[in-house]
Amino acid sequence: MRSTSKKIVFVFALLFVAASANTLAQNTASHVHGNADLNVVLIERQLQIEFVSPAVNLLGFEHPPVTEEESTVLKDAITQLQQSGWLIGDISATCQISVQTFEAPIFNEHGHDEEHEHDSEHDSDAHSDFRVQYLYNCQTAPPTALQILAFDHYSGIETLTVQWIADQKQGYAKLNRESPVLILD
Image (cartoon, rainbow, N blue to C red; front, side):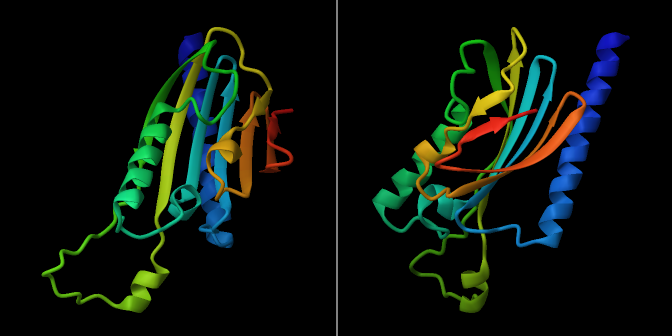
């Protein structure tokens, strides 16, 4: 019964973070170049992190790859995001990491022979985001100070807006290159 109670609490915490993120996104500009979002839930030995970022922060562009170089950048970003070890320092040795959700931008590519019947204003306003949710099942409780490595891997990320829940506490943080450590306290 105790295990079931923990699962219910964990799911409730995740729902709370998701609802908070959606409310925040509706109240502010949710797609801001240079900013990415983290939603973090830490309960005992489980850490769940949702990472959401505009494609431009990771790729340098928000359109279908045009050149071979852009195609390589997109493929490399997808590979790195699916491996999950890039986000937090010194946690992979004590935790089993899995990707729970992975969403990459779906670019509408047009062939050269197709007529372009789309509105160029609509295309310029289109936004593409990456969304990845990682689950860390750890042998011992994860640290409450997490070194975030996103700034080291993606120069387009200037700030990370973080909402977190750790056991019975919750908080909000803004991280940047000069201050990349998330304190869950």
